[in-house]
Structures are given as structure tokens and as C-alpha cells.
Image 1 (tube, rainbow over the protein chains, first blue to last red):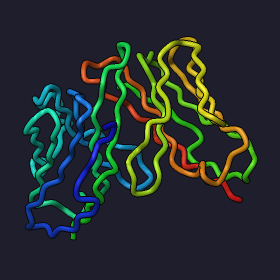
Image 2: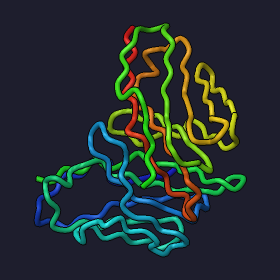
Image 3: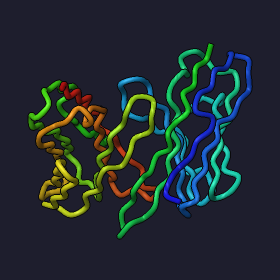
Length: 114
Length: 112
């Protein structure tokens, strides 16, 4: 298994809703990431988990709450989002190959906030 | 602040033409990755370059890493419509979690 999976593929939510994005990998990678990507822009790093501990939070608003239940799963809990949070949310995991990292991305969740 | 300059930002060419995309930085990378992304999908890893001066080929795509490991290029020979997409370079400056710094991307359109 050499892929990162994400669910759901698409999500539409209102500003008062609570929803969660899920990410899973079974490659034994110990670092996992959440990115946000707006149209025609590169991915922007949100959070990094290393060995199931949050190691980086790139000043993300508290309406985004990450969770890493185990080494294969990564969740992103969403609450009281704003329309400007509409974007493609990407999960990635990375492995060390000959002393350098390679990151592999999931297909993303297209989020629309109404 | 580490920056990765990618150019050109947009490229529209005819099928069969050649093209080159560049990524440059003033800092040294421990490794650099090239991704291709289609609309609404996640980036797909094409190649990782690690050693200064390294050249890697993937069919019609040739990737080069500068001798000083501060720059990289992607050359596509005889572009096909299927090559259309967003090409992203991403540098790893050796952080402990393998964090990447992304270039702004090159939106390539190959017309039949």
C-alpha cells in the first residue's frame, strides 16, 4: 500500500456546522501533514505531526483542530468556518529515504463553506 | 525566510514543443522534489533529487539539480497534451520533519 487516502472527497458545510476531514496511510510513515491550497496557488502548510505529536502549527486559527489518533490516521476537525476557508485540503505523509524526506500527498478534500 | 522562486508561472505551448521550468533559491537544499498536480487532485511526486549535479530522467522529463544544490530545472521534450497540469517544485532545507518549501508553481498547458 503506497498511498494516502482522504475522505470525504467533497464537503459543503455552513458556518455553524462541525465536520471532520480524515486522512489515512499504511506506509509506516511517522510524519503527517495538513495543507490548505487555494486555486492556482501552492499548498500552504497548516500542521505537522511527528510520531503522533503535534510539532508544528503554522499560526492556524483555532476553528481548525488537528488530531492524530494513531500513527496511520490524521483528522482535521472543523468548526465555525468562514467562507474564505473554502479550499482544497491536502494530507501528506513522509518517509526518510537515504537521509532525505519524500512527501506523498492524498487526493485532497474540496471544502466549500457557505 | 527561505524562498523558492519558480518560473515561468504560466506556459502555453503546442504539442511537440520543448520547455524548461526553473526553481531557484539563495539557500542550499538537502533535497528537492518535483510534483505534478491536476485540478482538484493532490500533487503527485515525480522525482526527488538529492546530490548536487544530479540528473534524473522520467520518460520525456529530465530533472537536474544544480551543483551547489540551490537550483533545479525540469525539462520536457516533445510535450504532449497529457503533460498539462501544475508543476510544483518543493525544497527540503533539512528540517527534522522534512518540511517542504514550495515554489509558486508553473501552470503548463499543451495544446494539440
